[in-house]
Image (cartoon, rainbow, N blue to C red):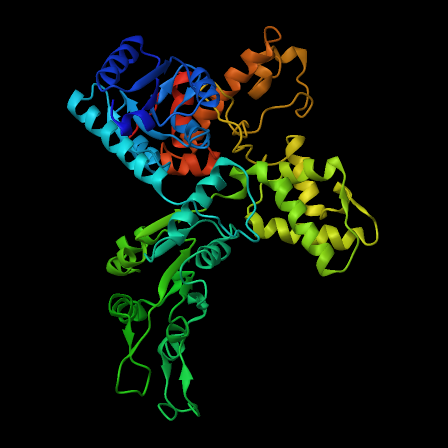
Length: 512
């Protein structure tokens, strides 16, 4: 057995098919690799928790869950194993989700032996080289998070800090794109240089070239002195293009050349100047969709996204809310020169029940409002939180409003789990809301919605949940005309979870 195999050769196969497990165990043994198997997701996670593995073969559809949903949890296990998806479902959307989740490869059963062996060899070689790299001690400053989603973000920051390549950071408003870009800069070889922010949303076509490239005195009306542009200020450092999707189309062509050549000409100057900068861009828009619509240059996008990172929304990392709140309140106490404040248990209960459409930015705003409302009091309680937040949480808990998404990064849902935010799509008829009918009319009021489940006898809770879940799916499909993207957006379900619920409830739907 060679040294590579001794160091990097422990593999776990998670698949509910006994024949597949046997075949893989036989193949890997012939490659002189250690192999363990598990028939369920739970057994696989237990095995990963009990010892470090270098590589995991993971089936998608397992008896107790969906393998793709468990990816963050698996990669966060001791040793951070590489993952190869091995599935009988030739699903292109599943492949996309798997690759976005950081898997090494996506193999469809039955996969040729040669292809499987080649994928294993490459994954183990990559792992050996990665393990041989010197560890990076990150300076994270105000970045807070302990869940698997943020661990992937920190791993990306470490990787990006060792590179000079362009980085594109995407994510919803308020997820911390500028903070992430600044953290990459502060941990990079360019940390001694400037971190220069360009707010693309505020660039006007008349002044964009002067702002980016600078100008010479007298080059236009009002140019009473020389001005150094932002591109030159970033020489030796990082140029951060915030909201890059807002950059005027007319500017994108000239900026593309600057990215390629690292040369530019200030307005009114005859000679070109150089600037050695690293580009990091951020947006909450779908730039690829904008390229298709002709509103963004594809060649510029390719130059910017050598490395890409999508920041998770706060509702998908609820386990970090408490840490974020404590961190920010501590900063507020220091800022206001106030004594350290404690927290009532109800304070975090409300925070974790809210959906945070504005993400971390909204959370920090709410915390400051609560801090000010508390005044000299030494403990923050739920009553100190803004009323609009408390009302939304209270209405959701009572079924009087749209319930916040309960997707927690620390809990992996399987196909047998209840759907997030399960609600009936239409109003149910409630007894007493209609005028009673006279017995001489010959019939009683029709029962509808939830009442129909109780027409003959009281159903069990499990039966009630099952029927309402199926009703919800049927109404969801009808309301959105079977458009999967619209359904996922409205329901908050992941694509794999939605398909699993269709199968579980035997709901038929034409999938394009």
